[in-house]
Structure formats: C-alpha cells, structure tokens
Length: 137
Image 1 (cartoon, rainbow, N blue to C red):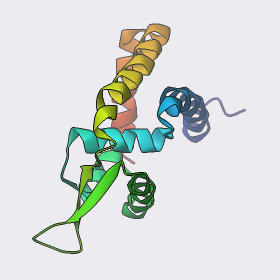
Image 2 (image 1 turned 90 degrees about the horizontal axis):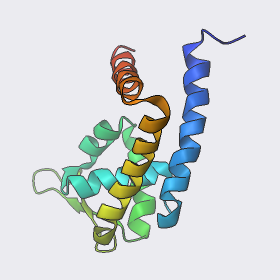
Image 3 (image 1 turned 60 degrees about the vertical axis):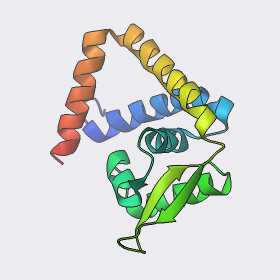
Image 4 (image 1 turned 45 degrees about the horizontal axis):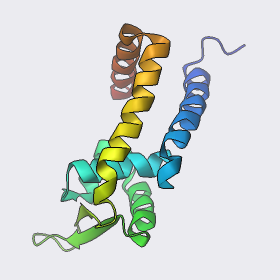
C-alpha cells in the first residue's frame, strides 16, 4: 500500500535503526539522540549550542532539552561566551571524557554491521542519497 511513500518507508527504517542504536548506547545509559549529541560535543569541545543543533539537524529548543538531561548527569557543561552571554559553548563534562573511545567504538560497530548486511556500496549510496534528499526538502 505504501511501497512508494518516502515518508512511510523512511519512518519504518528509522524505527529499525532506532532499535539498533538503542542497543549500542544502552551500556552507557544513553538514548541514541543523547549518544550522538555527546559524541558531537566530545569531538568538538567548545562548539556553540546553535552549532550543535545545526550539526545534529535538530531545532535549538530540542538541543536545549537534550543538553539539560546530559548536563544533569555531569556529561556536558555550558559556558557563556564572552562575546554574547545569551549563547553558550558546550564542553564535555569530566564524566564524559572516558566515554569518547567506547562511544565511538559502539557506533563504529553498528555501522560495520550495517555495511556487512547491506554491502559497502549500498550503505554509502543510501547515506549519500539520504543527505541529498534532506538537503533538498
């Protein structure tokens, strides 16, 4: 019935991927959204909150709520910028630093599993097409 529906098929795929990433980040007691956010902060300490939202392709309000949860756990800290007190730089908290390598390894493992199931070319082509489509909507 919905074989040619972009919405239906991408949402169904999203649910399947959500389950894979949930299992990957479960040992860290993080949701997939939290895991990817923390990985971004660990990769680029001092990123502005607005840049983080842009990187993750989420609304700034969504980034604020997610950061609130990570901050309560001591995994990130916000620092006002000297240029504009309304904007915050995001840094990994002390408790987050030891998680960088294991989070990246867990992510790499899921990616490798997907590449094995789908094939390297199909995986790469799909990611490229998804980014292209997302950039044109």
